Image 1 (tube, rainbow, N blue to C red):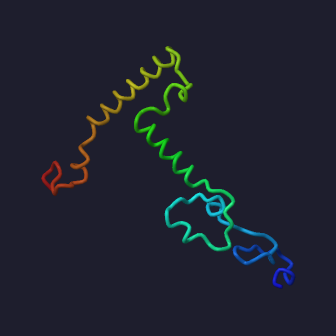
Image 2 (cartoon, rainbow, N blue to C red):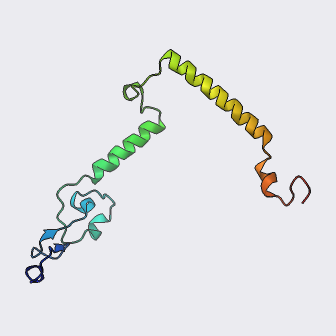
Length: 125
């Protein structure tokens, strides 16, 4: 009744088929949540078109395992290699930067002295 009375579209989420369009949370309609109690919380109006949650969790768990074990990325997924010249230039720039940082650190007071974190600064204040 409302949809026919309005000049603008109406969008329903659990409102039945009398609207201009439908919305569903894609996590629900794809079955992306795999928490054991998820089925208790899926709205009754949600039709599940797939069950990908377990595959997503399995994929994420495998990714984490391979990263932690140092398997991924490996050579197959690390196709970018510096030439010898590029690596030498890079190492030179990194050395210069490290020296600048060391000099800057030597010139700067310890942060705890600047902030008087322990009650006194260098002047005993």
